[in-house]
Length: 335
Ligand SMILES: Nc1nc2c(ncn2[C@@H]2O[C@H](COP(=O)(O)OP(=O)(O)OP(=O)(O)O)[C@@H](O)[C@H]2O)c(=O)[nH]1
Image (tube, rainbow, N blue to C red; front, side):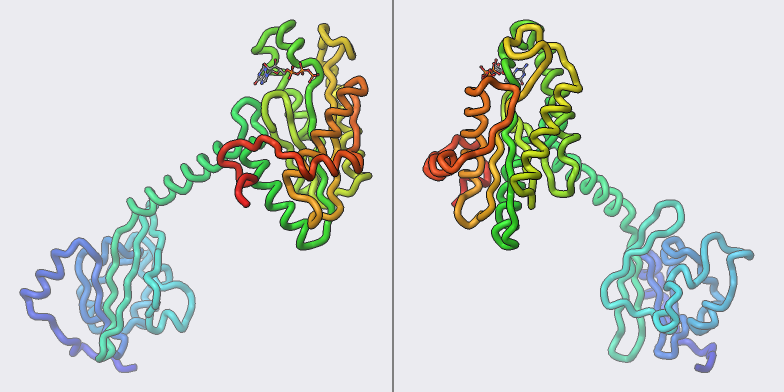
């Protein structure tokens, strides 16, 4: 590629118009020589051009190391990257987003004219990027809030409903089991009456943390179902694992040793758990799984509390027909 100093000039009035634009603008001819740039371009690049650069080829300019000299910022490499092909003639099809020093962001639009000229337009998008990032962070925060129970900090009912549907579908596809534990604090009304409602709230938080500790496998989910009721969703868990988790909950609750002086069952807080394991998701709906765990919980309560019970065949048969109140907006409501 020859270096020529006969780069074409723009008419002065057009040049002054382009100079006044609030964007960076540079033009390369079909020999990869710099034809023209405006002042704005130098503000939006890591390295500046100088008047004597006009007419020099891209490769030549790239080879000039100006970092130690008159320039602040990087070299041509930092503008066009290290890719030698891209560097020969920068021609991104998509506008390229580029980070500059000082947290500035520039979007580079590159257009090839029919006669082979490359026009590069640089737009300062720092504010847009900043706002976009702020929005993403807020969305993440909102997402978290909308899926979290504000009282206990664990997953809320909405998150549970979504997870149940997703895991039930996954289990149906893969032929895996899906287990559900319905956990209910024993004599919680008496706890509230004895220690006060705020202590009751603190108790709910303690129980939630214990349940969280018991759901350690990837995909396991502990959530507050409502009031003093919690659920534990255990994907790919067969009956023996589901009972294992229920047993661990009972033991950990005992280890927590939270006094419950008003409980006729035990001097410390206890829970009752209904366990349901769906080994053929095609046969029963997600709602039936909740109902079966609920029916088992009822039997655990009736048998004296502070224990777990596994859903029986009879529980499943009843569960299949029985509707259960689902929170409004729950995905379980949709067909
Ligand atoms: N402190 C507090 N109490 C709650 C909250 N949600 C529900 N409750 C209370 O939980 C109690 C549940 O009482 P019941 O349904 O009679 O059940 P229980 O007293 O635990 O009795 P059993 O389940 O039969 O052992 C009610 O008194 C509710 O007021 C809450 O967010 N905070």
